[in-house]
Length: 118
Image 1: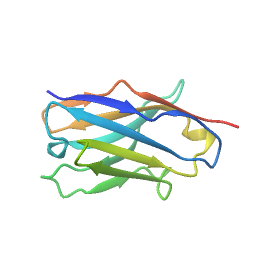
Image 2: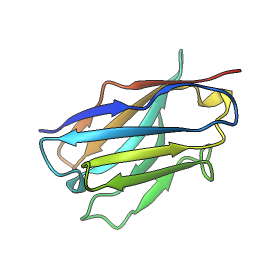
Image 3: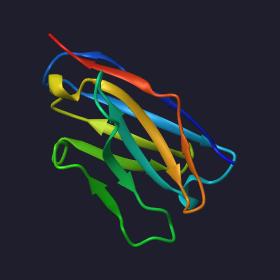
């Protein structure tokens, strides 16, 4: 069983940047497909980006709404997955959740709030 801890959220103006981090404890993160999801008030949780596990050929996947603006990456030294968010828009405002999947289980972090507002 793994545990996930997100950090890096906050308030930023439109056009600004934030970097989210999800530190994995309990097992190596490369054994999991790591994903970022978000949920805005009154809306369903939606997929943002994912990085496949070491055993998968899927690679990096992005939602159309964030392509070209967000970048997902892994940090082996921290055993984490990062989400670099550039050119943020008000519609990116949401609670962002980290997820780890290995085909047998799905684990969620507690979420971190991202607010884009002038």
